[in-house]
Image 1 (cartoon, one colour):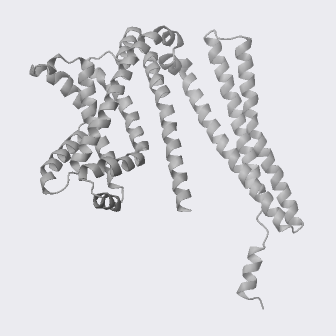
Image 2 (tube, one colour; image 1 turned 180 degrees about the vertical axis):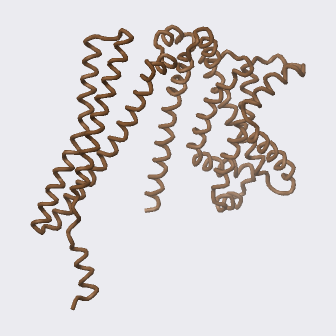
Image 3 (tube, one colour; image 1 turned 90 degrees about the horizontal axis):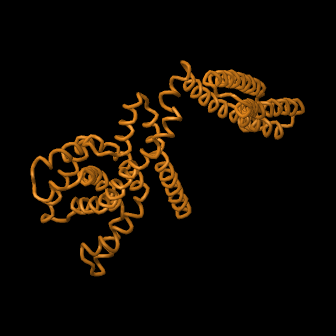
Length: 367
């Protein structure tokens, strides 16, 4: 009579199921993707030929891309081979080999599916660009217009750079001041906490474009001395500082409150005042924890500089709109998008690396 323990041992030692169907499906999916790639490349070649863009170089590039698309068949074929080895190992009752081969076949099948899905998305993007006789490409990626307007837009882009560099420095200081105001201790700090909370709630709920519009057009109309003489860039910096300072204040506050209360107790027991405790103990530790969120906030601030066009500042976006209006084409706006992407992606990758480094440090500390 078989006991439950014997049955469990039999299940543990049972050979894996066959993976032939998974391998065949992967090979079929890869073959269909390669065929679709050839069709798309053929359509791309015809579209370029209609524009007069033809020659040996283009033909060579198309041929290389067609050959590169066939690489997807390699993991699919390897998956099919591993499936055959799995079936042979099962027939020979070699459970260990069968399991190893089956796991390898499944891994190769999922590799095929993943790369095929990415390739299909790329093909859809190419088909979108060449659709309707290259209508999309002509509208957004008209190279002659991009080339002729690039330097003009690049010079205007320095206005965006100037605005977000100054605004980021001010936001760092202003956000910390507001965060400390929200953390003012005791009954004496209650009015300060209420004012800081009111400011944060108002400017977090106010869209940045409305804030820029109100400050950029409203303050000059008031006729206030000194302030009315500010430039448009100064009003834009002020508006962005007030708006992003409210968000950054909450990031600061989260970092400061994330420090364990024992740090404050230890500092106060050594005779440090409340301000000294914040300056020498709490804030340095809190800021170190919130560096990735700070950088994310700065990335958002950089993109918000494109909103200054509502007050007439000739930044890169406003300059691109002028070019687009003169040529009835949006390729100049695409240039602005590319410039923002160029300065944003390295910062995003830096944030990812910092988060990963902190995660590894926590794992090592936990171990």
